[in-house]
Image (cartoon, rainbow, N blue to C red; front, side, top):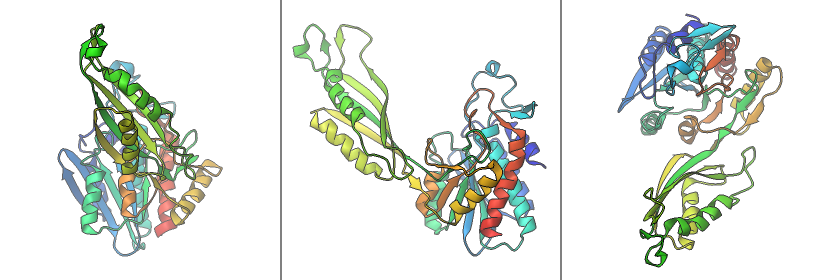
Length: 374
C-alpha cells in the first residue's frame, strides 16, 4: 500500500481525540508483517503503540499521533472531513497534515528501511498515541513514565509534526518552549457598588498585579529561543448585575518559556508578585512540559543535510511554535527534532497536504534512518 493509500485509509477513520478508531491496529498489522515487535499500551481511554525492530546499539524513534482535532461543522468543509478527497494534486481531510500523512510516511519508511537493511545497527522504533490533541495525560506522558521504569533507552527522536512553512523541508524544529498554565482565583468581599467601603473589589485589587505580570521582561531569549512570554487568556468576575461588586475574580494565564527557566522557578516568581500586592488568592498550576533543545550532533547534522536536499536550500532551524509530544521524550535523554509537511492548514477547515509532498515524505524519513542506522 502506497503512502497516499495509507494516509487516505487513516483519514477515513474518524479518530477524534482520544479515540484511535482502529488506526494503530492497522499500522501494527503492517509493521508486524515487516518483522517489528508491536506492543499495545492502553492507559485509560488512550491507545499507544510501541513498535521496534533491532536490538543493540542506539535507538531512533519516530514519534507521532493518530488522533485529530474535531472538524467542526460539516457544511463548512468543501468535502466530508473524514472522506479523503484529492483535488488538483491536493489531499483534503481532517488529519491530512496533522498528522496522519506523517504517520503513514513513517510506516512506509520503516518498511523500506528494514527490507533494505535487515541487519541494521541499533534499533528503530515507532511510538504512536491517540492523546496528543487532547489532554496529553495518558499518551506519551504515561508511556515515558513506563520507559523510565524499564530503563528504556532512546537516543534520537524524530517527531512528524507539520513543521514546514512553504516548502517541504524548509524548517527544522530543534527545540520547543515549555508551557505553564495558571488558574488564579482572587478573593474579595461582595457588596453594593454604592457602598465600596463595605466590600473589597478583587478586580481592583488584582489589576496592578496582573499588569506587572504582563509587563515583566522575563528574559532576553536563549540561543535560538525567543524571550519568555506571559499571556492572560481569560478574566471573569461578577454576577451579571452592574451594581454588585464581585466576591471573586478568576484569571487564566499561560507562560511559554525557554531553557532559562524551570516551571517551579516561574511559579515562585509569579506568586512573589501576587503576594507583594497583598492579594488573597489561590492558584492552580498545570505544567504542560519543560522546554527542550537539541544541540549540534549527529541527528541535527543528518537532518540538515537531508532537508537541504529536499527543500533546495538549508532549512531554517527553529524552536518556535507551541508544544509537541517530544517534550515527554526529551527528558529521557533523547535528542529530539521535528520534521513534517507544510503546516498552513492544520486545525482549519479544509485541512490538506500536497500529494507530491506526501509522496516525498517516506524518502525523507528513510534517508534520515539510513544516515543514522543504515
